[in-house]
Length: 471
Image (cartoon, rainbow, N blue to C red; front, side, top):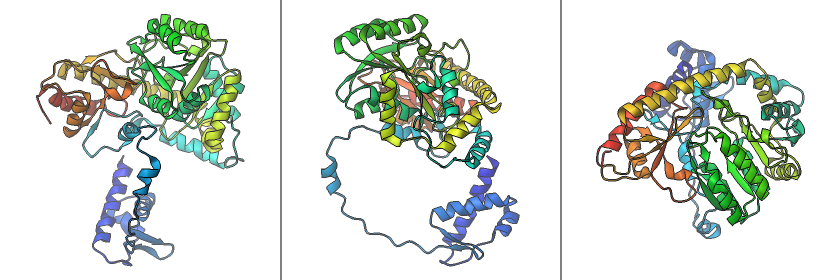
């Protein structure tokens, strides 16, 4: 964090010089900037590169850094024809995803999002692993479509039931989800999902033209008592579930429901896509094995990702499947991207077999536990009106229900917008429902923010929930 602040200070100083100088003016050299700010050469280099990327300076090797000439403004063309060509109905709405990934303004508390706090990422260890991988023979050649053998062995061992030959490495969990949904269905097919469920799944299903059939989920996961009737009525051959620390509810599929889900899949000849994205985000409590360990007949397609638990930039995941389904998955993946870069796969494999991986998991479990407890305690103290539907045993989210009778009766989107105005980002719950929600919910994320900031975020949220028309 200190290095980042130093780099920003140097960059801001250079911007001020650029603003007051004419094009071609020579800027202070690296050594002068190092002495002035007491920083390392690398910090100055990074600051200069950032300004060069913005087109503010020209770097001339051996001569120095100079104020760049302003770029000529390009006359905008007439783009109205695109509205006609694209039509009036986009195949999917990515605005929710874009909002979640946006960088918040300075001072805003982020109780929305889906990744670990940057301070928790094993950046140094990953950089070392990537450096070793990048120098290895064949690092920049074509990787096998199925993935590197070492990484496939790791995913197979973690699955508890698949062989390495039944593993397909993909470019992150979202890509894996999209590949699996497209491979196991055809446009127009019915698909059964939990309600609420991961918003990215809803977008994938809609973009593929599937008919989404929601089945309610509660604190114990998917309501399997309702699933059989839906499968019988729709003829659906794909059920997508998050049995462990589901997003957004944080629920864990109950033992009896796990058995009933597999029995219903066998009875109706359906696939179960097990989105096991959060297995490495356990905080406490018992953790059941993957559903696939109880399925010898290939009904379960298992999805495991490293992106949430290790780092957003490590876009590596895997699909595990048996029989003809594996061939379908492989064909769908080949159409998307052929293969995941070998260097990235090798870096992941290197990290996963090093002492850094279990050490990282212990750190994440401890920190997520502190942050979860800070959130739940703050909600209990400052916002007892909100109902936490389940105490998360893992993952990064708490799912809370808004009371039915708030002052001026705002809905979840109104509360989220008012919260933004008060300096805290929260996620309105309806984005996670494939149909109309039965009540108003918020998803509160504790994985990206320190315990102290979480408490402050809840305090700010309380001002807009409990005060009529507050902003």
